[in-house]
Length: 127
Image (cartoon, rainbow, N blue to C red):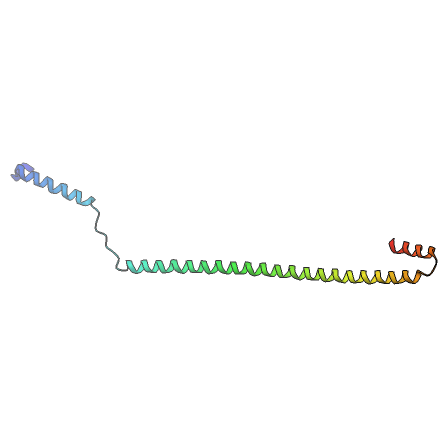
């Protein structure tokens, strides 16, 4: 029973203010304890991030170099095929020239014989 304590108006007001302050103090944010290794952890995170970035850059560069090497190999194969094709064409042309020269020689040798035999030979060469 509060009336038995002989409390006055001023005492009740101060008690109320103290209770209000205590209640508000519960809701105030408490001071956070800072980790002493906070700076070290930040440096460690930065170092890990840099290492990951470096690894990615190396992998990207390796992939780029591998693609370039593949393209060079394909180009080299194409060049070799082109050279082989040209060499085959040149050989074919030589064979055709030699055949044509042999046919000319044959016709020249036939030139002294009759016209009918020459015409027959020309027909064989053309057809």
